[in-house]
Length: 377
Image (cartoon, rainbow, N blue to C red; front, top):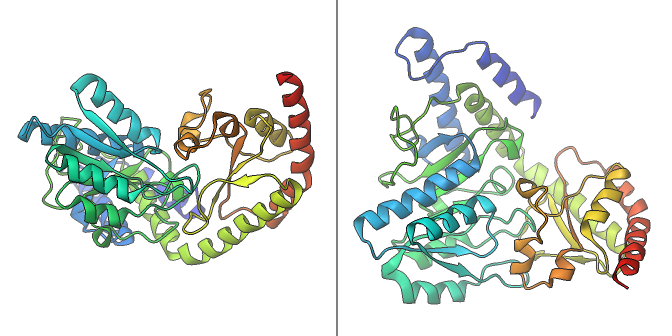
């Protein structure tokens, strides 16, 4: 967490109270929550009434997907189709797969081109064929493993009156996002990706849109997400959002420069290493690379021993021994997918850290290749 968010969280915890209570303490907490809601709305270009607080990005995505689907089927049993990009985060794919298995949803996947952008022509054909049956379209704002920013505004134009949900957790605070201008029906954002606390996020839901709640109870958050709200974390979320948006351009320039330097250092040391995803419009802090003839878990462990942290996919899937569905969606072979790593960069990344990767990567790759080739003989 950034220091400003820690300070805001600590101060609000000391003023403990339930924002739903009518007594003076509760009213004071409610005032802070509504100020935070206004602040976050300003940061994402929405109305404050459109910001619905949740406990995580996963919860917000589940709320949108199930809520839109149930509302659509309630109004018309034939509207049971969900259209989704093939390389979405598991917090999108798994609730959709659950609806397919348990509620009879039909799922159509939007193919992804090799450079990591969804194929709009394919989506246009899907909509043309299935328009009367589609309950929801899901396309993430940017991919969490390869960093490619998706043409969400174009998706909205193709969709017309079909609801469009975008998972913007990776993008918010790092690249420009304006909810109103983007035109989506709903978007998910989260605090922990911008230096805020864990365990607080938001579903930004267009005014006048009605979805079926997943949770029922006290009627908090427009009666869409019942449950006692986490006021201290919400206040800290707003502080982190303000800070991220205020420093976004400076951070983007610095971090994207570090990303380019890291890519150059790696390719200079390992000439056959390949960058996965387009370089046209990217998140600044994600670099996904394939090292042919290697095994990513071994690379990760050896780099970790050298003090360099990497990942083989989404952190939310850590410990799951399966190849990245994101890279497979790009048409990569399973062999190449299993030799790929994601490097994450942020506001604290230094040139010294970049240099340290350049100094050890050739030796690490050579050792892993030697062991890997020996094991496959």
